[in-house]
Structures are given as structure tokens and as C-alpha cells.
Length: 275
View 1: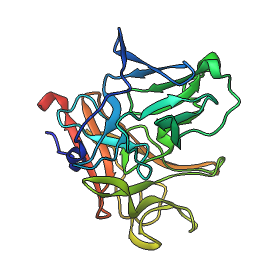
View 2: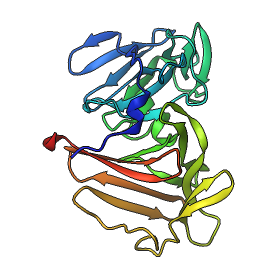
View 3: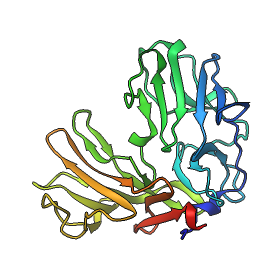
View 4: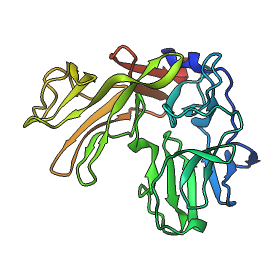
């Protein structure tokens, strides 16, 4: 049974400009300004530019590739829209992953690195994670930059929702303004560490809007954490990492969490076998 996604109403003109040169084995090639090659896997997910409604704004987004109504799960430039349909994602001349409009950098997604420019590769993984990596010394999971560290309003299987205290990285969700506007609103959802025991809190601005209650080493007092036939939840809490994640029970089921524009947290489910 599929659950529709409100974000599907955002799609006005899906422009798969990332996919300019088709090659075998479900891959395409993307070239940056300096000729650096990036590969984009597109089995379950795809990436491209879209325009919400009649707006001239364009956003780079990742969506599910195998769901009839495109379901957007991540937007790169929510508060920095392109105004030109010729915008493109590139690996720039300093090896950064950038969004470019009319030869001007609109948004730099990754920070400056010392990695060799010639070995810099961008790839969209089947999990929905857009990554930048050094192919010359790549170790699985060791990315220079990844979209999974910069959540939009959606939590996918395999994403980590919470803190990496070693880097001071807070992975939290921020709501969109409306079903037709992906820019950020004032609702945020994250793991709060200010008390002795962590808990999940939705804020509206600086005010608490909803909280799960504290973690008791088994579950949060207001939220069950038991495995089921859809997904397996996991919460990690130690001196370096404090985060929630989940794993889909099988490959045919797609499930995600979304913080909507009203501050509500919803779980969506799509099962390919029943469609």
C-alpha cells in the first residue's frame, strides 16, 4: 500500500540535467567545469532540477526514481534557489561540489579540501546519499562530503539523525514552508542534549513544540523503539555519537520520516509488491 507524498505537488518541470551522457549499467556521466568526471547511480533514486508550481525558482533535489509520483527526499539549495533553467551541479576548479548559474557559484555544498582534484568524484548512491569522495584512496563510507550529513525535512533509511560529537555535527530536520515551497520554515526536529538524558524535540523557533520524553536505554518514554515488519530502529548513545537511525526490513519496502510544514512528524510507506 503506497502513501502519497505532499511534496509531489512541487514538481513543475523535472530537468534531469545531471544525466547528459548515458552509459551502460544504469550510470550516467556528469562533468564539472574542469572536466572532472562524476558518476550518478540511478536505480532507486535520481537527481535533477525542479520548479515548484509556476515559480521561476529552480532547486536541485533527490527523489525516488521508482515511484510514479516523484517523491522528493532532499533539496540542496532550499534557501538559495536558482533563477536560471541552465543551472548545473559541478565539481569546481578547487574540487568543491558547487551549484552554478550563468558561470556564477550560487551555493558551495562542500568545504575546501586538500584532496587531489583529479581523483575527486561525486556519486549519488542507491540509498539516496549524494557523496563526494577521493577515488584514489576511497574506503567504503569514508566520504569527503555527504548529503546524509545535511538533512532537509526527510529521514531516509540509513541516515543518522542526531549528533557526531567528535565533529560537533548536528544532523537535524527543518520543515518546508509549504507543499509548493521547499524553503526552510521555523519548525526543527533534532536530538536535544541539554538535559542529562537525550530526547527528541520539535521546536517552533526557540519554543518547544513537541518532545518524545527522555531515553531510558530501551526506548524514549513517549515513543516505542521496537523492531517491526517494516523497519528496524536503532538508537546509539555514547561519549562520541548520539543518534537515531533505522533500516528497512526488506528491499521492496521504502519508508521514510518527514517533518511537515505544520510541525508534525509522519512516517510514509511504499511497497513495490503491492502496487
